[in-house]
Length: 198
Length: 198
DNA sequence: CAATCATCGTTAGCCCCCTAACTGTTTGCC
DNA sequence: GGCAAACAGTTAGGGGGCTAACGATGATTG
Image (cartoon, rainbow over all chains, first blue to last red):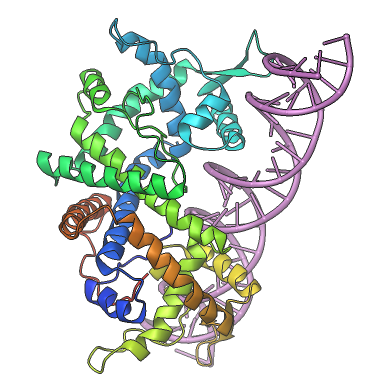
């Protein structure tokens, strides 16, 4: 739903026809591109219904997951791995992780705090910074919400076999890499992910 | 860019680990879901840069393509096929085609008209309706813009071979169909598309 | 030490999307 | 004919993105 896109995709013959008028139009590439956006939008729309039903937006959910991970990672983490950024996080770190601007993060934290999911706390050493913490209410919410969310995303992929999923991920990764290359830097591929689910 | 999403996707091992805590989490499904959203967002982001550089948003572009198609289809169309909705279109039809509400379409048409890309004209027979028409300026814009846009989308798919593209489209179509089934009606698959390129 | 520069969080203003309600017009059914 | 229902487009208000700029604090460096 976030993406404004043609409702019905062009048929392949129409693309072929248009390619006569526009030599730059590569029919199979255009078809793949349009189906990618359409499928992503469709899949996102399904899980968004879930979020809407619980009165939480995708952006706010993303912040909650980021914070939840820093709480629960230490618990789940086995001895070996480095702490991997546990403890509370600053708005700037959250913005980085959620891929939005700091200004946007301010707004998200505002509404999350207003609804009691999150608390701002001053940083004792650097007075420029804040720490953002999950409240007990948020932990309860996630505990109730996540299983259904996971079931929904699992159902979306029901139609694909295990090997089809592997193939899909491989092709999509190629596309992401190519896109990252086109947009600028040579793809931050091995950027030390270390995230828990979602 | 429209989608707020974790910047770095979880590694597969992390998903496996989280699946121990959440039995409903299907690791391969979650992986496919996240990569789908990420790749769609990345691909969209690339072409959005193109649009931004020309001061046009995705929504406005979509409206222009819808109108452009109704103008150019008759010209390109061979004798056989039915007119397929040629001529100007009403805001309600545009909203339907672009998959947004009529209220949203009002806003899009407002700014397009303000910038001289489009003109509203009263319908002579039904005074509730309007006809929206492309101006010459818009035709010129599309003529200049589309080749570059097509080259961009073609480049995104450069890394995929012809058979990989077919495979991708097949898998994505499965996902869209499944999503449509989950959201409600049994998928408007054969909905008489008949669109030219976008 | 002081001036400069970088960084943090916030604010202000814009665009685009949504829902809900409103005005005006046509249609349909007594 | 007249009145209710359906429909077209708009408006009002909200959420969630963005950029650009700001005050406050910290780091750097002459």
